[in-house]
Every structure is written in C-alpha cells, then in structure tokens.
Length: 379
Image 1 (cartoon, one colour):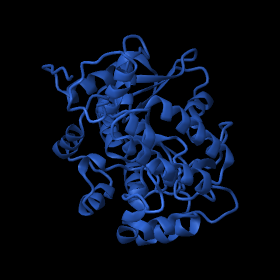
Image 2 (tube, one colour):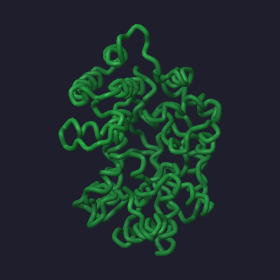
Image 3 (cartoon, one colour):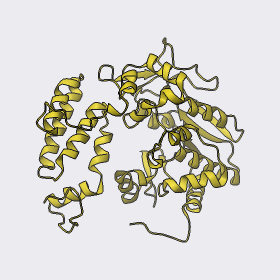
Image 4 (cartoon, helix red, strand yellow):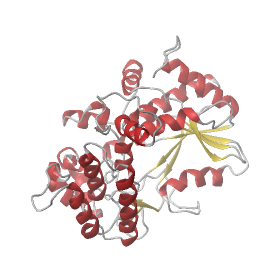
C-alpha cells in the first residue's frame, strides 16, 4: 500500500540528501551510468551547490564490459567542474553469465588486451585487499576514509523488487532512516538510497523536466521494443541482462566485436537470441522437473555450483510442494541454469512475486485469507 503525502518524491529526496550532507562530512555518489544513478547524482549536485560542498565526488566502478554509450556518458559527466571523478578501472573478478565453461573473468586484468584503453583519469591499481565486486564497495571507503564518517548515495528503488521494499522499510539503518545499508557502523560508513520510493515514471519525468543528460542506451532499448520498466544499464554479461546480447551487435557493432573477443559464450548467446531461454518443453522429457534435473547434472561444469543448485532444488521441492502451476517455478530454475546465475537473482525475482509469497504464507499457516485470483494458491 502506498501512502501519498503533500510532499512529492522530488522534494522529499532533496530533503533527505540535505540531511545526509549535514550528517556526513564525506558524501560520494556511487554511479553506474543508469537512469536512477543519474537522478541521484543531479539531485545531490543541487544540494552540494546549495550547501557549498562542490565539487561532488562521484565513483564509477568500471566493469570493462560496459556499453560504449555508458562510457561516452561517463566521460561527458566527468568533465563537469562540479564533479570530482573517482573512476576505478582496477582488476577484480566478475561473473560471466553467458558461459558454463569460463564463468569468471578478471576485469582490467593485467597483461591482456582490454575491451578499450584505460581512461587517463582512472585509478588502475587495486589497493583494497579484495578482488570481489560486492566487497569492493565496503573496502573502498575503508581505505580512503579509515577514520572519517562516510556515506554513498546510490540510485536504488524499492519498486523494482519486493525484497528491496522490505529491506528499505522494516529495519533501521541510521538513526530513524530505513532506506540504507550499514557498511561499517563502528567507523560510520553507510550507503543510502534517497530515491527509494520513486517510480520509474518519476525518474523519467525528473530527467525530462530538468533537461538532465542520460546515457543513450535507453534510446537503443526503446527502439528495440524493450518495455520501459525493463530497461536497465549493467555490464554486458550480467545474469539479468542476457537479452542485451540479442541486439547489441545491431546498435554497437564495435562493442560487440570486442566483447566476443574478450569473453567466451557471448557469440553463442547472440546467435540463439529468443531461443536462448526455453519456452516449450523438449519432447524427450516427461515434465519440466525432469528437464531441470537433466540440465543441472549435464550443463553445469562447476561442481560446487552444481551441488549448491541440487541442494537448493531439494529445499524448494519441499517448500513449494503442491503449489499450482509448479511448472512456472521449474522454468525459473531452468532459466537460472541457462543464465549461469550464481547469485540466483532470477530465482529470487520469481519467488518474490506477490502471488508466490502469498502461497508460501498460506502453506505455512500464516493466513488463509488470500483471494482465489492468486495464481499459485493451492486448489
């Protein structure tokens, strides 16, 4: 349920950012180049200018396999005198969702040909004590601000995931703020999401009304019929962005050539296109469950990942036993296998659908008051 107030989300977010500037001496924008990051950046620039805190530090953790349109946008922004750029082109491990053979690569690995030349303004040495992508966001402020209060501002919205919504509304992060994440509470390092309650329509309205620049990736996606709610910017081999490979060669040919040279599995995914994810059950299998188990056993090369999936499937077979349309769950599990989704993001997105969550609660006896319209409720 949404609660509407007299204050709109634009003004509310400005006030949140003002408060954070007053609370923290070090405020850094964690920037990806996407639309949500763009709105967060320009809101923060408004506040920083208002409070005499320019230039504003902006951090971009470059994953190498990025859209060229994102890099062009980044270079444009980072010449703005109001911005103090922190462009990281350092070696770290990153997952390749397009290959079951070589699942991990090292972005900006020393001694190899990269997809593009490093930017002259970039930091290139990994001094942070980890080569794991997610851990870097904690280690970077620990290195640069070891004894100072610090916070990231990041463009994350609750609308995109029920899990995010719960995380941003149930638990306190800092004082009375729930829309954030603790990085190191002892030192005073946090991440905050000041546009957490925005809709994607709010994002595009703010960009339009203020004539803010944005990456042309969204124009490419619009031209290729990608639904507005599904448009996103990420590295080109992310487990939730495989569909990008189906049209990348049409809009950024040079990027496509460099990417296929750099990573295994990309060219195969691009050739499969709409057939990359299975729509119809192959005739030789009795049901989707049998097909799932066959793919798990024969397609997954990494034994640890295979055992992890088998354990997960066993748990879910018990948890969701008796659910109507169980084949939809099995399809989600199969897509997890086909996308090499080690973070299980696709599976989490499925199990967090309201009707699936309702079924789970119904089975656990929490409530039985759900409508018959809920697709997955047991008959």
